[in-house]
Image (cartoon, rainbow, N blue to C red; front, top):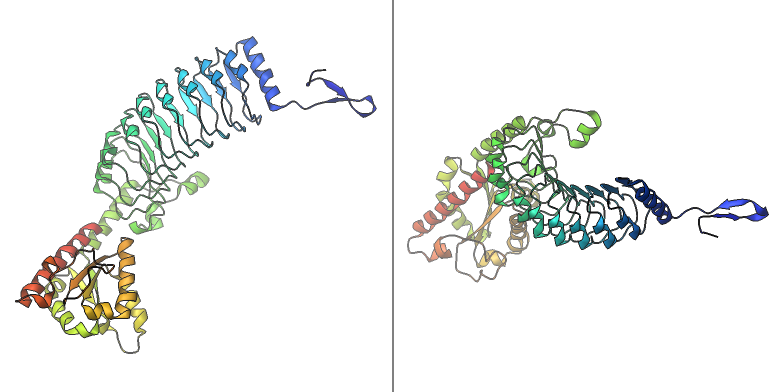
Length: 446
C-alpha cells in the first residue's frame, strides 16, 4: 500500500495519513510538468528539502519557495534556465549552489531571511538581474562579481554584518534603490557620488559618524534615511540634493535636531499617513544653528596643580585676547563660589568643556585628583570625540609615558615653558596653538 493511500484505523474506519511537505511538493511539480505551467508556488509548505524533480520543469519562469525550512538547494535547480523570478526567502539556507549562475534569464532573486554567510561568485553570471534581495542574513562581504550585474536597479542588503559598503556596489550604474540598514558601516566611501542614478538610499541603524561631501552629487536622490546612526555633523553637499523629498535623521542626538523639525518618524508615517518633514526645512534649521554655534566661544577648562597657579595665571593673561574676541571662554576651579559643591562643579565644567588644557608639571603628575580624576575624565571625552585635550608643558618632568603622552602639546617641540629663555615667547607660542585648535573646533561645529 502506498504511503499516501488510505489505511484502516480502529473499527475498520478509513484514516488518511497526512502528506508530508515533500510529497505535496512532488505532486505540484508533477502537475506543473504535465500542464507545462510557468509558475510554481511551494511557499508555506515547511519544506526541509526541495525535490530534485524540480529540474524537470524546464519551462518554469516563476518559482516561490518562501517560508520553509530549507537548508540547501539542489544542483538540479540550475536546469531551470527559463526562470525569471525566484524567491526562497525565510528559510534556513547557509549557502547558495554554484548552479545558481546557470539561471541566466533570472530578473528577480529574493533570498532574504536566511542564514547565508556568503554569496557565490557565480551570481555575477545573472546578467539579466534587476532585483536582488539578500537582507537579514549573515553576510560580511559581497562577491566582486556583483559589479557585473549591470541592469540591477534594486539591491537590498540590510540587516547583515557589513562593515564597509563594497566598492563593487558603486559600479552598478543603473542602481536606483539601495537598502543597507542594520549593518555595521562606520563610513561611506567618497566615491558614493558615482551612483548618479540613485533615487532611494536607505541606511539607518549603522554606525556612521559623518557623511562624505560627495553625497551631494546624487542628483536624482529622492529618499534618504539616515536614522539611528552616530552622526555628529552633516555636509553642505546635502543642500544640493534638489530632488530630495524625504529625509530621515531621527535618533542622531549629536545633530541637535528637535523632533518638531525632523517631522514624523517612518513608523508614524506608515501608521498615520502623515507627511514627512521637509528636507529643505530640516537642513536650513541645521545649518543656521551650526552657523550660530560656530560663533559661540569655545569652552576651555584648565586641569592643573595649585602649585602651578602662578603659571596658570600667566597663561590666562596671554589668552585674554582670545577671550575678548569671543573665540574662547575659560574656566578653572578658582572660579568656584563659596558654598558650592566643588567636586560637582568641576565635574560639570569638565563635561561641558570643548577644549581641556592639561597644565603638565611634576606636581600635576603627582596630584591624585589631577591625574586620576580630571585627566581620566578628559581623556575619556577625547576618546569619544566630545572634547579636545591639549597638554601644555609647564615645567620639565617625566610625562611622555603618561596616558596623554601621545597627544599634540604646546609650546613648540613641547619644550617646557619655564625652560625658554624668553617666557613671553613661550606663552605666545602656546596662545597661538590654542587659537588654532579653537578655530578648528568652531569650524567643525559648522
